[in-house]
Image (cartoon, rainbow, N blue to C red):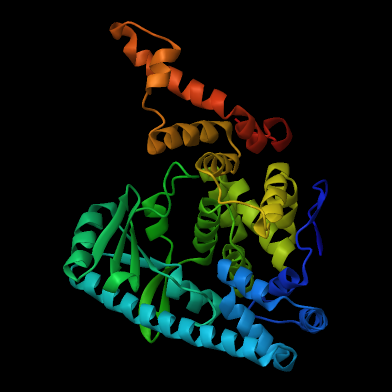
Length: 405
């Protein structure tokens, strides 16, 4: 299957196997007649069901794969395979319901301690965007609190039997019952060096009420959810189809979102390219609808289109290895359209990764008297850039991407 990207971007092979085409057709909550017919046609081909289940699981798409195959043409699916998919769907549903119950319990707990808490992704996204708790694969609970409440909220979770596994500046990861329950407690959506710094005030000022399992909970406005989903997709280098599916389903559920607000805030934050990339992937891989006026702006960003080609070529690659730290970091930087933001991201990355600290190789590279030792903190980033300059330039492509100052 060929997907043609906008205007001057090249035509690429997104999928060459019927299993991948089948998964893309099933990666949606609403099935139209054209795709239903395409699914039936694909099922008459020789499907490698082991491979299909493998890539569906890898991309977090097992619930939608079963949902659409069962609704469209269950008799065309081998009964043992359909039974396997049904079992996974039922187990996933039980897990999602359990996590939803736990989320409501934790939100109530935070409320008793006067800690404002905002759930995002997870059950709230499944219910508000997918319209069904069973249709999105949920593995953990994401909860945002104010920076001033972060440590108190963390300690409160620990008092409830959660164990702290990982803590980084923007979040901590806690588990309970041997990992059955996982909570990511945030004081920021994503690391600041990754893409852009979203003001906490901006997030807390754009809340709506949403009813989850009969309980009213706070939820982000659709415009902010789009930003959040694109930030998370960028964090993972868009390596999983479920991230793209999240964006496509949001666009389907909220076709009348305030696009003027989306674009204006993206300009202010310097993350238009980051959002445009998510929109391109959702439109061209999953058929999401983007308003024409918005699409004209998306289409004008060559850097976003180039990144979309790179992402699509790697999405289902059978030979691709996990993204290395350097390539991941440079991908993050390349999603910024302003040069000053790229520089800030690079410096933030250097600090976060520990690359700012001079090493023995730096000391040997240019021996200096002790009185000039601070110069090593200037030499270090220059040497890092020099070491990875080819990868750096590959991702940046400044001459072609229209970098602004």
